[in-house]
Amino acid sequence: MNSNTQIVFLIAMVCVFTGCRTEPVEKPIPDSEYPSTYRKILTQQNWEIKNAAFQQINVHENLFLNQQGFLEGQVSYETDSLTLETVVQKVQELISRYSVYMGIPSGQTFDLENMNFFTSTLIPNPEKLSGNTANG
Image (cartoon, rainbow, N blue to C red):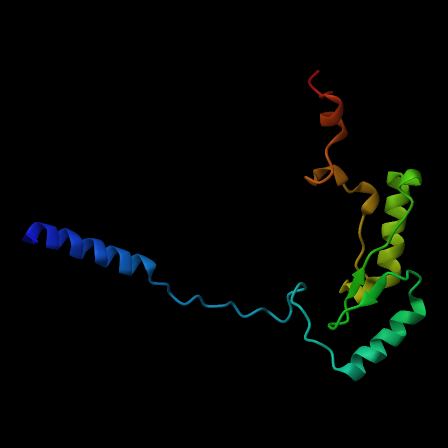
């Protein structure tokens, strides 16, 4: 091997090895006051106490408390009879009944009637579906 080939080979190897090296990533420490920080897993005794209180108010068989004491599950409704007003009413009922188990602070309110549900990418804007636009 001539010296030029050796230098090119050496530079290529240095680039490969330095490019493949990974730096340790520091994990941020969550703020205990931040509302989406997960609670620690409850002890069995604390979970049983919380679950007993939950079961006294629970009217949906597919809802349960996870190990952190948060509400999980599904609520099903007949889709043929759903209107926007019905959905708003049902969501308000769920929040009212289960807010303690959703991590929603007492006194927190939501203006669901004036919320724009069509800003989500999951629910297309009716104007886009029909081809109508405000500009004509």
